[in-house]
Length: 123
Image (tube, rainbow, N blue to C red; front, top):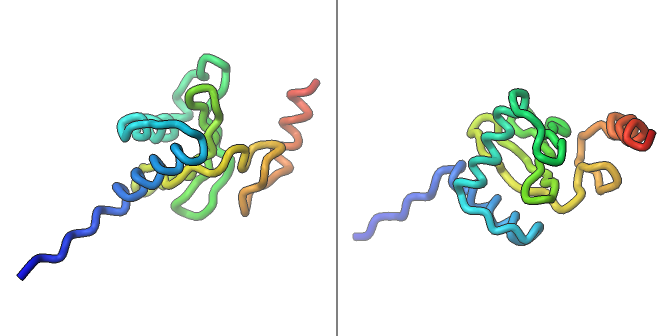
């Protein structure tokens, strides 16, 4: 009589999913500790100094009570991440440009906020 194999926890599955999406959508091969470091940057975003290029991690909006969308610089690209505030993990990485000005929208985000930022940046 064999035992049924136990399914991994949801947080572990989210990390594995994020790693696969980083590889397919951005060509980045990050290990799990680097992905956890990205999640830590999101957790402490309000305390952090800007990156070398002056970019902060930025919350783009809330998808649900549990999930928030973030723009986070990593290796000279800006990643659009979905962060799980209950498990403190990154759920997935959205395709390039999603949720950023000029890119495809994320359902439920307010685009008027970005239009004002673009005008300030061009002045």
